[in-house]
Image (cartoon, rainbow, N blue to C red):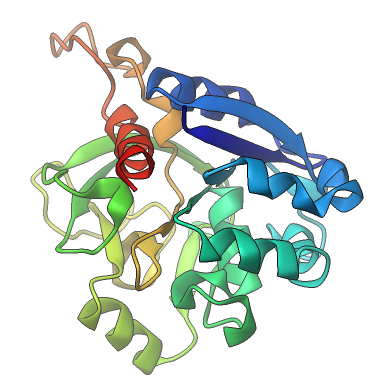
Length: 258
């Protein structure tokens, strides 16, 4: 069975939902504390998927996801590089996305590449906590292959504005098919606030590395694994699974075939 590690640090608060999402998708998911990895860096060898869930790790001191990103780079560099040499996957959601970007693992896929983008304060100057529409583009992301329809997921963040370091980084993201989701309006068109909840450049909501194995996004797919979680499920006659579950299932099925 595919085994997924859901990384926890002080301040993580979406680990339960992430564990549940992977279990629904057919994986055996386990919570793994950062302190446990410090004591046994070889523990990552047990897993094929690493998930960094949402929350406010270390109270977002020095910036959202910054301290956890530093730990990844300076305490777990060799263990992470060994993990990525195997046919493995990584997903970072909200605070996890912030961590992947600030560690440099996204968008390059290499911790040695340095930071090429950031996730900074929302243009609104406040915490945005609501549902958004997302439109996929052509992309290489393993987690979203075959998912061609626009979806709705909730956001809950104060620092979700994606900003590339320079125009060259943005050009590469577009050219290599690394932009996975854009914020959009209900008709699927790119639009300003409130449809783009944070002012992200290019309305970017999620990106992947060039291989498609490492995926980060600000909206929360683990909070929409059942139709009952959608606020308008009754009025819209929704049934079945939520639109976020297919993302987790794609990841699990890829590992099973690898």
